[in-house]
Picture 1 (cartoon, chains in turn orange, blue):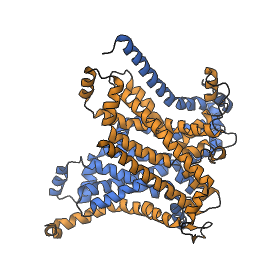
Picture 2 (cartoon, rainbow over the protein chains, first blue to last red):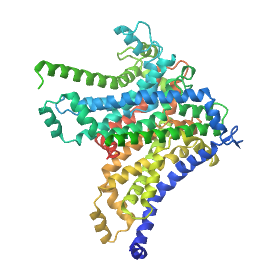
Picture 3 (spheres, chains in turn orange, yellow):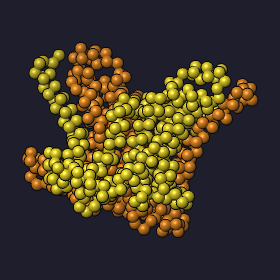
Picture 4 (tube, rainbow over the protein chains, first blue to last red):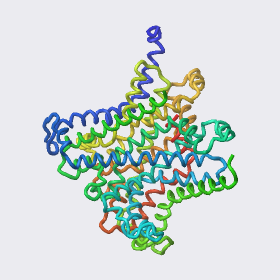
Length: 299
Length: 273
């Protein structure tokens, strides 16, 4: 029955359809699919610059003995494990508070909290670097209020430098995630909340038993995007900590390490490609785990 | 039900929390604007009052940086990336939704898989490709890899589901060709979809950093994000000048956000539906 139509209209449809999707698919194939496969091929080679030779799994073995790589991997995973949950919870709380129609001035609050996500990653990193300088406004304020007695070395101490990166990305992306939750909350029937309120369900329980379960698909979506984003962290770390990856590599991320391996040190495209595949594998595994966890809890 | 005192406490807590978050979100912007009017030393000291150094900071910025050229470079890259991405992606979004082909869904799914590829894994092959094509240090190299965007295609396809097929049928009866239907009916009808996609692509292109950092190596081709980054990484950065730079870099996206706030929010939502 499919073939009966093929000769006439069916064929016409096909040709047109292909013409419409061809430019996009062609570009994606050329600038995404081809490079990612090339990168896989390169990860089995090593050498300086263009002089590459096949080394099989040599690069992968080198990964395990490379302290800088292990440091970058640990840092990246630390950002992921600490920052993503903080941001998701904060965005959820803010969204549910700002969804309350009786909250006066919620439009202004919303706009204020969205605002960071229109700045460039570079511009805000530069601002944060100034604000968190040793004699900068954050330290002088903290000292004036009496929270700390001596200034915190935000940019030069390994622990505080990591903390600063986490504060910075939380500032930039919380509002972005909040938008998704606000949108999803608008689609929830308000009478569910009314009924719960009349039944005497306290606000906190309404949040954990109604809001969170109903928002689960959106939470999954934002978690996956945030995971991909965190694993690619580059602009902030590069600009907050002078491109070096902080005091003794304390803020170095995988992306920054790949950049250094390729454009700062003696270029080794093969090894850099291997490190980049670590990110590919991490993204795939973590995204899969998140989908899996969401599905399991549905049962 | 809650008693009066309990409710008041909740209210105070809610406004306090939301107010604090809003303040923390806006504070760096205030600091940036006040900073542009102060000298570098005052900025670092944390002076939170307007100063008199604005004219000097602007003058210093314009002596240090060839501002018109840098701005023009950013504008050029952003405009080309935005127009081409919208054209290519909306064609594909329309194509994927309107046409039937046996391989359509599997191709679409394969395309969506590319969303998972991190840029770090692409940058080395892309750099070598651009080198071989002789495009290093050109704006073409900055724009080219960003045009085919699986995310924007996905966004257009989702929105195309709302496009009334009666319009298309009627146009066909009138004898319009497929490209004419797209150009004269689809594009005007889908205005708001284009507006939302415009904002997302515009912001991404304007704020792009890592790829331009790799490809653009001479001062004549650098975009504003690259310039601010290099101003701020000086050993003793002049924060007054840096502030003027960050304001100039943020203004276009801020303007787009305020003029098109509604579409911006819808644009973000389009991706969850």
